[in-house]
Each structure stands twice: as C-alpha cells, then as structure tokens.
Image (tube, rainbow, N blue to C red; front, top):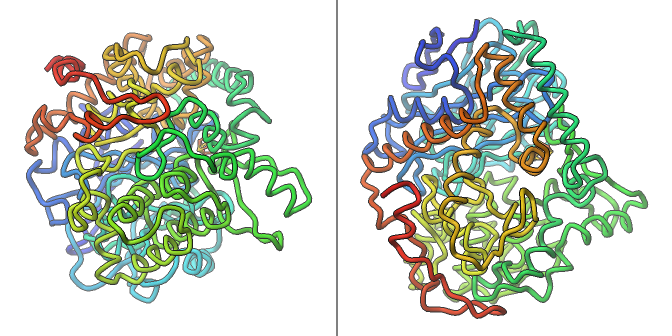
Length: 580
Ligand code: SF4
C-alpha cells in the first residue's frame, strides 16, 4: 500500500501515514500542489519553518510505462512568493515510487548544520552532511555514491552551494542514469527551500522494495502500448527523430527563424550566432571531437525519447550534460554568447553550483544590461558564475535572480513575471506563450502550457504566432499540462499525444489501469482545472491579484525586431483566460 512519508528536520524524525481518502487518486503535481495548498500558510516566509517541501512521483512512475520517471517537487517559492511546482526526470523518482511512497513531505528546519537523509525499505535515517558542503556537485556526488553502494543501488537528490546559501535561483538536483548531478527541478528557488531546512541530500535506496502494481493490469498494459507506439511513431519523439538526434536545442534555429529567440536581454528576436549554439552544432561538434555519431541518451530509466545530450571538449573528454534548448538560449543568445565551449562551461557551473540555468542566464543578461559585463563576453559571464559559487556579495545578488539584480543595478528592462525570469520564447513574437507567461501560477514558465507546439511546431494544427486570439489555447494547454505533470510522464510526450489520438487515449488508460478509475478525456480537463484552481487560490491568499498577471511594461512600448511587434494583448483579455 502506498503511503506518505513525513520528515521533520527540526527533531529529525520520520513517520509514515496512509494516503488520505481525498488524495487517493492524486500523485505528481496534483498531490504536491494539494499538500502545499492544504498545509502551508500562503503568507508564510518561503524560507521559514512553516513552508514545506513536497516530492511526489507521478501516477505511472515506477511502472513499465515509457518516459515516466518524473518527480514533482512543490513548495512556496522564494523567487515568486507563490506556489511552485518544478519537476525532473530521474531514477530517484522511480525508486521512491517503488518504495510505495506516494509523497515525501519535508517539514521543520535543522539548526545544526546540513544533513543527509537516507530512505530505504526500513524507513529514513539521518547523518551529518557538513563535510560535503561548499563543493561542486560533480566532485561531491561520486563520494556520496561510493558511500551508499553506487549508482546501481541508490539515486541522489541534493542542493549545491546556491541552495546552501538559500539563493532564490537555486534548484534541486538529481542524478541521471550515469550518476551525473545534472537533472534539475530548477525553477522557482526550491533549492533554497531545501537549504533552509538544513537538508543537503536525500539518498533513496530501493533494495527490496515492493514495487507498485496496477489495479487493472490489462487496462494499464493496453494504455502503455498505445503510449509507446505513439512515441515511437512521431517525428519529434521517435528514435533518431528530432529530439533524439539534436536534443531540445534543435529549437534554437527554429525559434530564431521565426524571430522569437530572445537575444541580448530580450532586445532582439534573432541572434546572429544562433547556428553556432544550436542542437545541430552540438551534434556536429561532438562528432568532430569524439569521432563518433552520438545520439542522445535517456536522463531516466524507461525513456523512449532519449533527448539528453552531452558536450565534449576539444580533447574528446566530456564537458557537460545536458545542454537543453533553454540553457543554450539563456547562457548563449540571451547573453549574446555564441561560443559553445563557453556556453557549456556556464551550463556545467550551473550544474555544479546548483542553479536554474534559465534564471541565471536571464540574470547575467540583466547584469550585462546594467553594466557588469558586455553582451557576448563569455569569459566575464563565467567569472560572474564563480562569484555565485563563492557566495560573494556580488554572487548573492546574482543568485537572488533577475528582478533583484535589475533593481540593484537600476535596469528597467527586466523580462520577468511574478518575480521569475522569462524562458526562451519572445512573448511579443509568439503571443500564446506570452499569455501563458502572464497568467501562469508559476511566474513566467513555458512548461506551464507549451503553446509553442501549435504556434511554431505545427503540432495539433498550426496557428499564427502573431495572432493574439489565444486565450482558449493558453487555458487548455495549462489544464492539459497540469494533468501530464500528474501522470509522471515527461512533458515531451505532448508532441506525440497531441497529434496521435491513440497516444492520448493510452495516457488516460494507463492512469485508469493504475488507479482503477474510469477517467475519460473530459477528466483531463477537469483534473487540470482543479489543480490550477488550487494553485490560483494559494496565490490569491499569498497576496497576488490580476495586476500580477502582466508582462513587463517595456514589452508594451518597445518594438521587437525583426517583426517590430509589441505586446499588444489587453489586460482585460488576460483576465478572461481563467474567468477573471
Ligand atoms: S524526453 Fe528527455 S527530458 Fe524527458 S524523460 Fe526523456 S530524456 Fe528525460
């Protein structure tokens, strides 16, 4: 039977509870947001003792369902001041699910240094972790693995020095299948929340775990097969397809072509150096430096899509993994940097210090605008990253994110919503994603509702990105995304299931097979709405109003080349998306 494990860091105790009846169908984002909504005072300080950090594997995580090893992490965000859900693909999620833990809730605060929690079939144990603080995660992870029987036996969740310093740009790190500390629940500063609790590592050992079994194996298997077939067939998700060959960075050239690649702190929509940092350049560069054609790998067990890349130095040794589209853009185009080795070094420093690449790339760009560096100066950007890693006063300002850095340096052009820097799509040139940024409960976040699929990629139809009539699209994508985040599937299944109806059916049947429910397509919208309503209610109680559902002023008066477009969607239209 699945249970909730509660860890109190104040007195270092751990107790198991049965999953309450009201939560019996909930997992992933539905459960993390439910627990935050129900248990965390919305007005509490995100780094104080009343905030909680919640981890939950999805409904099908831990099963043979493809591309489903996601862990959802929830808490009140120190970056936005609202509710936050971030998720990552990692074997850690699978081990937690196989131990029968539907949710792990971290409460309280240690006042005597940092701690490692180890979770096994026998419960949770605590050990001091101060000896591992202040170091790069790539140096620390091997020793933690060695002490706990290796990557075959355990997976590790942790914070880096950014989380130790409680910086709002700190993410929560998980290892990939090769043990690299490289997979992040990055956004919203949940690494700072973990740091505020004195929690450095959560090691999960699933030896002897009971595993999880579907309520109805036949229904589950039918759904799983439909899902696998859709992922294997679709051009974007299939083996040696777009994502497997070039990773998510395949988007650099595509988004640049449509004039939506934010460049030099959202000053332009096209970057002259785009081709040099694109997925194709990563693929060709690796081939030249390693002598082999490297297709990408899976970040977590059971992924069919396998979109995660690596980058190699000139001598053929591995430099970093993974350079996602968002990271190539944030640390590249948005800072005017077109040198892939410098982008790779910045990416690796974010991995090592425990930072969200999107927030940090956005922050460095704002710092460049504020005079701390020239756009395009990759070496200076690397120096600034080291300031964060060393926890200097300058580093702490940068680690606090783009809004704080902009205020400190007197920069008016800060591309943030609800305190969170925008991701890699220009809202003036792609209106639907702009609506998503504005109204998302998470602050500016593309993964809240990835309207890029129809607006740019022609998935589930093709829409004009400059057409502002996107309210229904933005709403429905947010509902569907909240459901996918609940299943435990990676969001990238969306390409296949939006185009292939049987894949969408398969997702629902998998859930029905696991839970014994009889959900239909209507329930996807119903559950998504329920999740969004809860998150919006939390944010309202925290003090958010419709005035927070807005894009920054400079986007209204400043034309974006090459299309010379402004943000021209009326506030009243934004307020209509969720019914005011
Ligand atoms: S599609 Fe990519 S990010 Fe998603 S689970 Fe697979 S390898 Fe990880």
